[in-house]
Image (cartoon, rainbow, N blue to C red; front, side):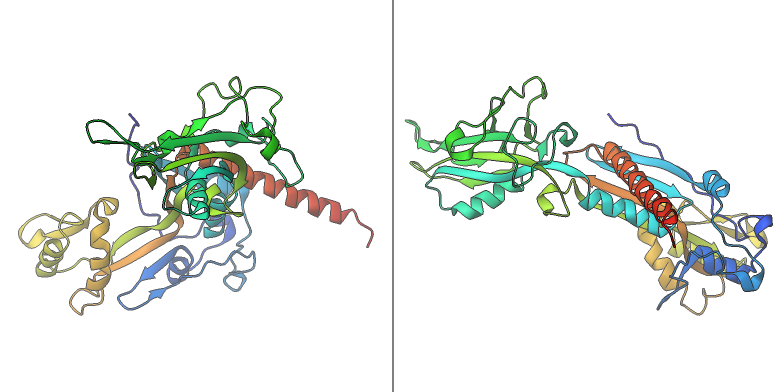
Amino acid sequence: MAKTWVAQHDPAPLHAPSASHGALTEPLEQARTRVVCGPDFNLHTTSTIASGQWASQGVDASFDMQKFKQEFKINVTRVEGFDMEFEMLGVSCALANSLRRIMISEAPTMAIEHVYILNNTSVIQDEVLSHRMGLVPLRVDPRLFTYKSKEDAPSEQNTIVLKLKVECRRLPNGAMENDKVYSRDLQWLPEGSELSQETSCCFASSQSTLLPDGVRPVHDDILIAKLRPGQAIELECHCIKGVGDDHAKWSPVATAWYRLMPEVVLLQPPPKHVAEELAEQLPGLLLLTGSGDETAVAVGDVRQHDKLLEKVRRLSGEEQFAPYLQLRKLKDHFIFTIESTGAWPPQELFSYAVQLMVSKCDKVLEGLQASSRLPS
């Protein structure tokens, strides 16, 4: 069973990154680090990364690697099955979005690409059946295989072969057998195609050694077709390696998304009657402290009360609460959620996305270094 733990968040103070880089006024620092979520519209929604952005204020905004190393953190808050949630601190939205896009469209998986239909007497047309087969996620490590181009012949290094042969019949007791075709009915052929002449697929060796755990769908209960007595489906599927940028069937995630860390701020201590009403309107999120004339209100764990945040936004626009309550979001603190299809464990998928991002950066550096050596 996956371990689950929650990272506590301490809102970052509104001050400049470091003394050596100068200091921004509090309103400018808020605009740099926070999005203010107003009742009608949001403020400071853009993020600009430029060394001279705050030059007029005497602040050097150049990238500081040492500061980045100190502030960058990843806190894993939940890993359950194919889902993973973590917080990423100290990065820009450009980096966070790049990792998200890599996971969606550039991390490879194995998926059914070619379907050779020998017999299909079901009510589902051949092309629709083939499309349904392609969307079945497979539990196999794509890193064990190479990409197959149109010119390459199918081999044990670039192709996985699956077989489906099902016929519906009525049993003597009147019940029907195989009236529903599920993904678990797919059979792996480690020796290669049984239709080598038609498919030009010939394995030089068995895949049993390469894949000791075999190849199977992530979910065994995906309904592919319904049959009536006498109807049958017989086909052979060839799976190849691809990425979601080519087709969604190769995307390893159902979705990968992020949101900014919310921050509920008390702009000033509210009077007793306002504090009591706020605590009543936002139970658990705002907590009463003290008693009598010493009654005050404090902010609780924001992450545990996500459903109240929209109410905070609305209340911050009401006349009696506007001077005291505000909803903000931190621009450099992201709550990431990965919902894997099961082809990759989510933690391995994120690690791969980071490695791919590093390789992209290396290519950019190599290109810049090569261009600097060119004669002017």
